[in-house]
Amino acid sequence: MYEGAVQELIDELGRLPGIGPKSAQRLAFHILEADPEDIKRLVTALVTVKERVKFCSICGNVSEQDTCIICRDPRRDPTVICVVEESKDVQAVERTRSFKGRYHVLGGAINPIAGVGPEQLRIRELLTRLNDSAIEEIIIATDPNLEGEATATYLARMLKTIGITVTRLASGLPVGGDLEYADEVTLGRAFEGRRNAIA
Amino acid sequence: MSRNSFAARTYRDDAVVLRTHKLGEADRIITLLTRHHGQVRAVAKGVRRTSSKFGARLEPFMVADLQLVSGRSLDIVTQAVSKGSYGREIVADYGCYTVAVAMTETAERLTDVDGEAATAQYLLLVGALAALSRGEHTPQLILDSYLLRALATGGWAPSFTDCARCSEPGPHGAFSAALGGAVCHDCRPPGSPAPAPETMILLAALLSGNWPLADGSQPQHRREAAGLVASYLQWHLERVVRSLKHVERV
Image 1 (cartoon, rainbow over the protein chains, first blue to last red):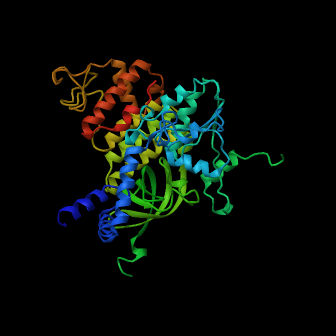
Image 2: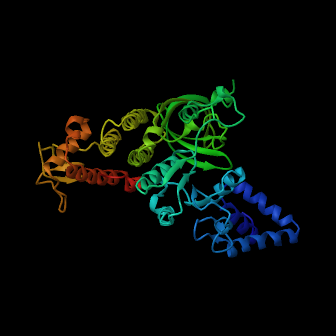
Image 3: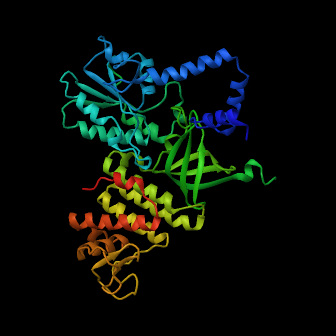
């Protein structure tokens, strides 16, 4: 145990995800030894992010205004919505530069053991958005793990009666890998999702 | 060879994945119910990367032949070969998924590191997941049957015919979770529920695996039986099974 401020800093850093007691101690001593100007910038960034950043009132993505930069952009296709679990998934899809539609961030995936059911996600907000007749397709881009698949199944069931095209991201082999190293689940999915090679 | 060497700390076992937690950048903590080593918590390194070789084999409801290395607090998964892949069929039906999650959470609560006692729980859970993935019976009936049998395997076998307290031959009209099932008129604690006779017959059928009788039961008796099973489970576990409230009941 250290005295006062140092121990308080270690305790606070230790509450961050992925930071154990040793890492918290290392970070605390790095902060103690760092240039005061660098630490002031860090403190300002922490305060600013909590004061300025909020969630987009339309899609739930992080934004500094009431609506995010993607929802404000008139060049984005309003007929397609890509449903993702977290804001960081928006950035992953944006990096592909192949999707020009808009997003809807659910805020997680269905995980009953953790107490997260459909009511805890932004599914009601998605259904409200679908009242807009311009929307023609929903792309479900939840994670390809069990919670993500369960969320996709639930969404597909909810959206089945609305009459909008509902698609799911393909699962399969990673680009650059060898077929012999693929596990049977992924390879099975790749076979199911095969497409016509003759254009 | 030193007792602490890598080879000495390596062991192999069949396991069913109960749940996963994210760890660090790309790792996961996997909670497993093994056939011979009881409940094991192990780190699976890099499984959240899309290039992971065994990420898909360590998803919940998967049964795999695993090689693990003992660690101080957590073991490490070094190899995984799939033995039963039930996740895909289960997750394709949301109702089935909620049932399977409730079963794995119950298995996690009922088991510990005691390998001998866990073997029966392991076989019971794998059988229930397989039945669920094949769609042999209504998912909710499979869940209630699994819960009753898992509790019986854990040492809390209920009685639905003879009185759970004085063993007077039944059938009896009252149910007490605290006393262990059906209770006679003399042993009945005040305020005990009085389920329909058909509900008690259904509960006995679910416990013994009499599926023709269970499949032919009426919805109102299934609902009543589900409520009694849930109360019996929570009384004996002494904690809430969180996923039970998310189970979709028809």
